[in-house]
Length: 545
Image (tube, rainbow, N blue to C red; front, side, top):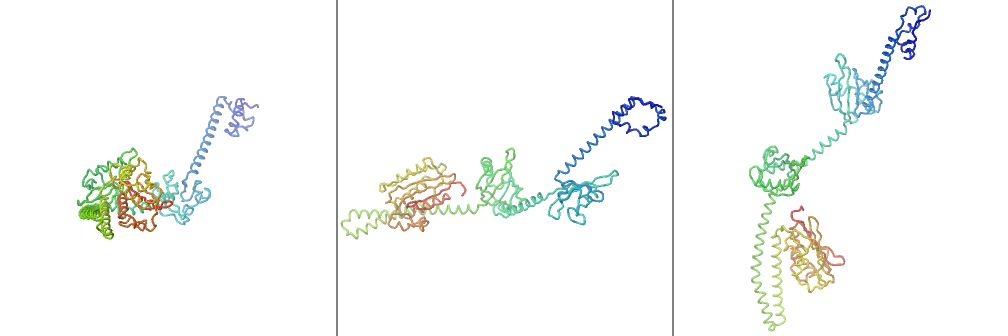
């Protein structure tokens, strides 16, 4: 008997790639012709629906499988490329899966880690580490973390995350582990550095502080500040408004204004007081710190107790005033009889010279010469005593103009080469014109005295920096022995080349004293080709030494 199968069925089976023959039992296609007559005629529409459903399901299955593969691959790539060690442990605490980073940490492949225990792999131990978060999270059923150091010195930050089964039991643990050795070493180094810094600050005899603005309070102080103000502890001091420590609270406002305007203050001397009201003097060094928006945040710096220094200054000023008064008194008391001696000796030389023999005239002339020398010596002593009486002026002096005025006071006719003024016309410095003139008079006077036979001019020059001035006077005379170059700045020392020269030996002492007042110095160098170059360095008043 002929098989009654519609062509459409065979065609769909062919188009579907044999899906129908695969989906239906093979026995359905192996029937004898005798049995086929009992099969119902397959409806075309029904076959189409079956084929469509099967094809759709297959496509979905294939797409789902590919998506799962991609997702698994992507997850594997992410887990393998992360810097953290990621390991999954089963219920027996053995490694089920590990990423590439975990394997690289012990120079093994992830497959070689499977089935092994954590403490055997990373810590070479027979028993689990104390405080292991993998074990703890099984017990607490919540994430745990801990820092553990391995035998090779590395430090690990370990997180353990429990994995729960269908019945709520802990069936495994995910371990995420990071090597934090570098961070821990940096933290330890930071703590050691902070401890050293704190020890340095705490043992420093000068006060160090940080304070807020306005009336302000100290935010941080070292023990020297606490002791300076007579408090028992830093906490007690920090409770007191800073203005309470000022003898005049307006000084605090002035300090803050200067700090905000300039950004810092250096050696701002302030009258302050201790907890019990005892007056003290403090030198403040401060720097302003600002927020990101530019607003004032706090000030920090150094606080120095200069009470003893101020008392010493007061005693010195008192002694100086007494010395100056004494010098004037002595000068006046000695000049009066000396003037009479000079006057009478001069009269005798004029009216009685022809009545005296040569020896008597020489004696009388010697009396007159020594009297004049004594008068010059008293004038020089008075000048030396009064050097520090003048305070630096607010308006700077023009160096070129002062030198021109000084040269007009000197008799240069006996020195044909003259004096060369190499000072820049616009150069200025905060020094009293009389003090600057004293430097020029003494240095040029010495050059004229000791280099009188030179054929080259005496040169006066200067070099200026932001905080200092260096003057020099250069001559081309006989020069000075090396061993005497420092001694000539001592009072009354005239050196081996000055025995037959006029002078009192106080000129260079006066120059040295002026240099000291300006935190500077004076010294002598050999002039190239012969002679002396005397240099004087002065620091700008108010600048740091």
